[in-house]
Image (cartoon, rainbow, N blue to C red):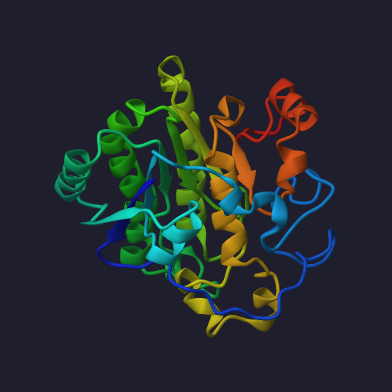
Length: 296
């Protein structure tokens, strides 16, 4: 297995989290400002930490090439049965020239990319500030990184994905794409846009076999939210997921081609054995579920 680590120039989105005593996600009906659709209804069981059925050592990525934005060597070890060959590439994803040069470097080392996990993203949290009180520079920066940067990187890297066998493109989205949290308009709008972008990619590249879907990584106290420092204790209580559940679920989801997931949204807290079952798959496909829509 080959793993390419993309290092954004102005932030790190995959640093170790502060591990606290974990509890199950807040019970349905409890206070949870980031509760999303189907959080508790898609599968009967929900998880906040890794479990045997998504153990990454059971997945074989031998001979595959995986690109993970913001990845670390520790994450690389978790992505397969043995530590893979790692190529680190430093890119400013808000700059088209930097993105194109970075992808050219990747192409010079690898003929194709089987799986791309687009993990780039930033958030500026100021829940006390209404729209007219927010910093316009920070507001725009979130758009530039979260949606335009994702677009630039995806646009440049798709040709390499199309040369592979798995042809899988995953965007790390957020439950925020479905929420309205005061003070977080830029972040949540940008994540809604990246989720919608995956739907466009799924439609535009269907004939070429490209699979594109979005994943909510769980509510994790990473550095993107300041590791919870200064966060209201009530809000912090809903950040119950571990980093491992996201990493291991991504391995499970991308170990084989899953055409039926293309264009859809997945929450890592859902129980993967049930979610990936034939019964659940048929219900999701027939109902055209897990896509952004307007209720009328």
